[in-house]
Image (tube, rainbow, N blue to C red; front, side):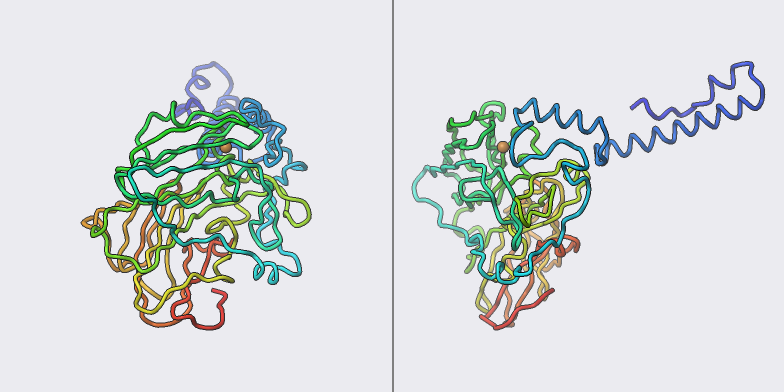
Length: 393
Ligand SMILES: [Cu+2]
């Protein structure tokens, strides 16, 4: 905080130099102060978004600290040649991208049933795995045994959630549940490769919550795919009964190559600069455009949305309708809900729940209306009434 000096010329004006030097050094002082100010702003807003030697050194040190310096799936070298710098690989696609999109098996967005009884046992396995994040785009992820996001977890308010986390990855990981009120230094502690850990918490707070690996550097672990959603459903009767429940986890991907031939890896410089190559719902660009979610006309469709980030908010919007009821920030108290609103922000690390009833058959895109996100893949379709065709909105 010392870089900005409000009176940079004071000491200069006190010295008995010639007028030229007084003016010249005063101007230099102002220049230094201005540069210092902007340097501070850049540091605060996008730490080390450029490939500087210090970026390289600090990133490598951070990686070394977590034992991650030589891990596949993490390019933290910071050098332009190795990491791709800030080159965008958005929109890269092989010639047969359309075929690949059609053949892709979409992540199931349907909310699974909550287990019965007082305890919900949840087993999670972390794994280094090569994923497809867009048609023909391979990414060497640190994720879950089933890919990214991790499994959708559904429990009922008041149930005890018993988490068992197994680390099948090559470096330490952990799991942080936003739905828990628990000492994080104990429950969310690092688990060594090959080891497991268990902890329990009571799901007293209803909503949809993020869970994620909280091992440092957290930005890299989340961006690599170590996130998911847990729905804590309030008791029957609190919310109107939904005919369809869909869970969407929004996230960003930062690539060090196009991922067409060899799998891309994580690019820390682009993550710091918040310049994703791809943005997705449930881990794969545009998967519900080719494979739409479905509803019948007049059904109550409930979207449980988590924005895993790591850094960019999701402005949830459904084209062609208005959100009948929104539970912003996944505050499930009906008295706090909003009605008949167009777009609601889901913050990075937060959730939101949205009810819609659509009478007219058609194809209704759901998007983050921060529209760069749509171009980068954060778009899907709700097919109401089993209509034919597709659209490219
Ligand atoms: Cu991790």
